[in-house]
Image 1: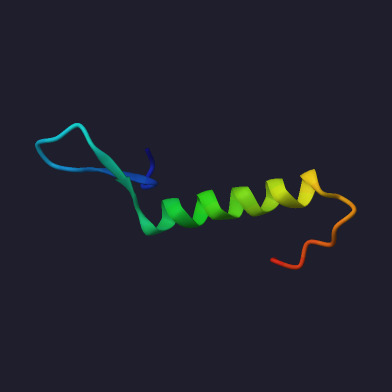
Image 2: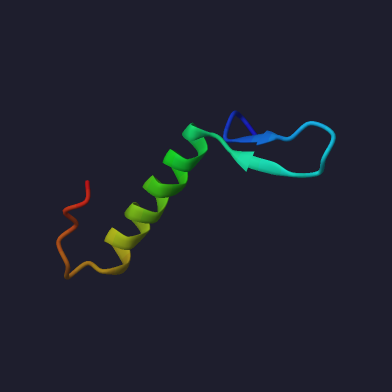
Length: 44
């Protein structure tokens, strides 16, 4: 998936790459900022 997930050889498992984890965390932070508009988003 464009470098976000990497498959493990000879298994059906995948794991997230460093870039994938960064994208996931960023998406969660952005979602948190929009869900709580009264709170100031100081994470970014």
